[in-house]
Length: 192
Image (cartoon, rainbow, N blue to C red; front, side):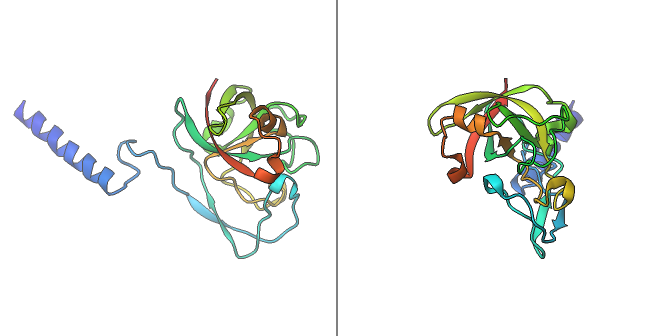
């Protein structure tokens, strides 16, 4: 018994030291998600509709395979995306191979949250903390946090790891009608 207690104390001290030092491998206690690598950009023309950025030569972009943990109120950055053909969203949605009307309540999630498509056609609840309004939106695509700066991604950089990329319909449902001027906004989301 004494040996077990001593081992637990030592383990606890080591775990505490890892947390204090900011080690992301501290048994999942720290909710961090660090870039796995960096992508070197190359300049090319892209569709800058809805405030989309184009990759630039000489710039580097973080690449993530993870996203922060999902909770009952997951903090995220809401960005604007066009899901119709020839809009800034690029090709058809990953989940169904279809394009979606801008009035549809649809979103793309960062790679970690998209989880290899396991959230496809599931609904999430998005809340605008600025006015308290909420919207229920269906996941139809991935906002790729690892790949970018190529034709498949319309020469846009990878998404950050905390993005809910939403249609204009979602923005309107959240009470934001000047979405083109806003660009991005802090929100929370949860699985509906």
